[in-house]
Length: 480
Image (cartoon, rainbow, N blue to C red; front, side, top):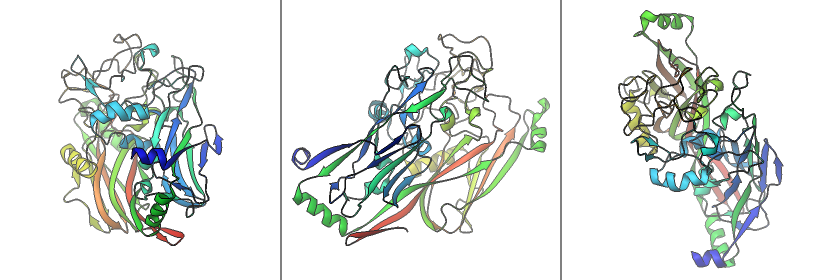
């Protein structure tokens, strides 16, 4: 391999052909018979903050500003990942702890991968978002333009599964290869804060915006004619099957008048009211669907942040992973009907053990902190400091000077990350003609910061099977 890289490959660095700051960036590869390996990657991914230095979203780092990313051959779409930042927030956790801690977190500038601190709590070494700005870990901190930028590295196989199957990209076939990235510059989707909420500026120094910087595309060209001819024969003689990641969503309403009244009275602290949401999802019709994952986020993005009335060290800052949390809900149930038949027996997915089992069985290892997929640490009250602090995320309640705040709401409670990694994942492995979701949760008397009765958007990501078939100097892409 060393000799191949030294004698048979030439590495190209492509600057953007189009770069509109905070909007889009487009790369185009040279064509005319060039042969590129599918190991393409983008470096220099990053953005600067306006107003103050800050922390990125812990689970996502510098990937958070990638809203959509597409791989195109002229007008033909070879790959497309919509809501890319949200899917990458899940994908970043699909690895073992040590590779995430030592390698992946450095490449993405995120804070996934955890250690047990000397206090016996579990957290990423740089996870204290309540520390003073000067104490933030330089490796992941987002800086203002005057201070610099922390760049990330993205391997394109992560977002374009087709690259994991093709042995090479031959520009004699793919004559107009280009990569297009659309940015998401909403500060609430990119940083921990402090941010403006409800149009009201925070009392602390506000991060008012982010500004993207031009990244660079790196591609390895095969220059050895013998290897190039061999790869060309291999590419042109086969058909390649892969699973594209596609997205849809449905909304879950907040409590209606009758439901809210039933759980509002102080005397009804133990009353729960079932709420059912039925949704027909059309995005996957007439496609073979493999694995799926559901992520539950607040419909109102402001609600992913502590309000301005919170304690000094928390006001206008994100709760855990902010808008990339997948929120725990009380007494969830999920049943899916595929082509008129229930996908799961009985009432469907019921209870946290079954949910965790199906998620692990479908997607493998999920690297999250203990208890972050549950509503609280053991039987401890989430709105108070947890008695159990060993092997759990550290209790919140630290202010900007590292001291426990003496005023405001949310001043002294369990970690913001508790209940923020509650994903629902499973396998379908069927051709879908019609797919219906029945999602249930329990509304309750809840005055906590979590507020389990709020309106949600449920994001659905599914692996959808596709095939690219080569025929002479042409190709055809189709759903299977």
